[in-house]
Length: 424
Ligand code: UD1
Image: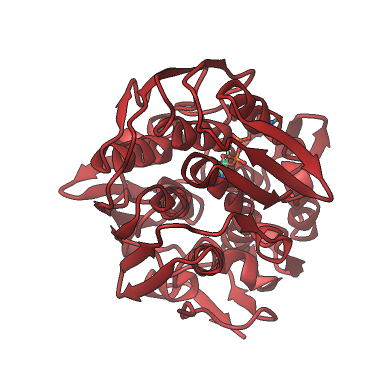
């Protein structure tokens, strides 16, 4: 079930200097669909997930589910997962290291099989990402959990029991793992300071459609009343707000005009306020939004925060926009410690950015200048491509496979909007 993307050595070659104009359609959200796939483990039989993007991460999660004994097949944008009576319980390092979202099988496996061994994903290029909230939460639900030989090993041979859990930080992954464990626990679980991201709400609705009892989705307090069994389901994934945001920033930066089909303004309120501050004209359309920009962007300060705050995944785009904006700006990263690594690459394009701890201070210049750069993660890679669009001359962005993890057909979509982009 290989995705239609190219090889791991691919790079993007971009000749900058044009305004992006036209229409683009946003596919299903990566950060939702991967979690829905993992949660399908909770019910024996065949679940169908619709609006599934053709991205590398979906293939990795499919491989992981197959290794756990599931059958996975794709028909266009529909994915079917058939879960056996007794799935295996070990998620090996070779797959987990490729994608942190593999950790999302932890909660469902403990709940369904009574045991999970999941490799520690390790750090990645946006900073260390702990699992302490996942582990402490599972212990509150009555599991034993420890780390041994690079694996989290969690066991609950007699099932889980509902508990009151308070998270120190509204971690998306921890809320997901604990919610997908608690749905089969005996009694009531409350998760306080829960994450509120639309992807998490989508997961909650997927679980409800399987027969789970969940209240408070989208609020900081989620209440789950455990049930003894869940049923397979058929669910359509929400659209990807980070991809929609990528196109919105592309329109603003290149002084273009893009209609984003499937872009949900209600999932991007703070981001759209920031773009409006930068000078963009944003209008609702029948099935999405339209972003127009008729001037050089105004410098715009931002601090990232958990949802509904400005998403950390959009950080590279706002820094890239500010790099060519009129004025000076400050961008603060509050979620991940090393997300500014890509700033070194942006500096190769001539951007004036200095980083001090959580803060990046940016002085906009009229145009960047093309150079060879390298993607270090999905969003940094896409951010560099956007920066290349406003660079004079040619830029190559190495590490296209990072971008493939999250963006189906990125080069084709860019070309359809008028960009001079090739993949090689
Ligand atoms: C998810 C998203 C990612 C997004 C992030 C924040 C997926 C596949 N990834 O990542 O794109 O940028 O949410 O919106 O959906 N933390 C701990 N201990 C824990 C768990 C988390 O300290 O047990 C910390 C992390 O190190 C990080 C912060 O909490 O500093 C946020 O992490 P979290 O919300 O868990 O992000 P992910 O679920 O990994």
